[in-house]
Length: 143
Ligand code: CUA
Image 1 (tube, rainbow, N blue to C red):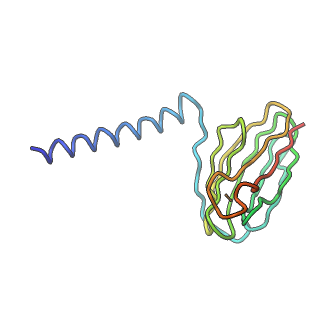
Image 2: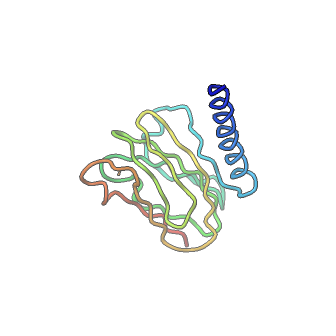
Image 3: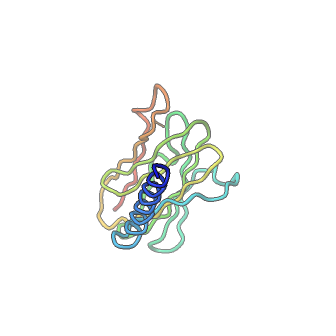
C-alpha cells in the first residue's frame, strides 16, 4: 500500500515535469537546449554567416574565457549557438535572454537565440569553474 502510493506520487511528479517541458516548448516558445554528437570541429571557435540574418557562433570555453570573446551580429538575426569546453564544466548565460547552456568537455550544447534589439549582450559563466570563474565572460554586440 505504501509502495503503491510512492509509485503513484513518483509517476505524478514525472508527469508534471514532462508536461512542464512541453508547455515551455510550446506555449512559451522557449528553445530547449540540444546536445549534439561531438566532433573535433567544435573545438575551433568561430562565427559563421549562413545568410543575411542567420548566423552560427561556435563557442569554446576554457579556464577562464570564452572564444570568441566578442561576436558582432546584425540586429534581427537568428543565431545558433554551439558550446563546448576544453577543460572543466562551464556555464553560458546571456543577460536578458532566456539562454542557459552547459559547456561540457567532449560534448556540444546548442541553442538558438533571436536578437531583435541592438545592444551589448553580456555572456557570463554561471558554473563555478575555479579561481577565474567570476571573470569568465564574453560579449555579443548587436547593431
Ligand atoms: Cu567557467 Cu565559471
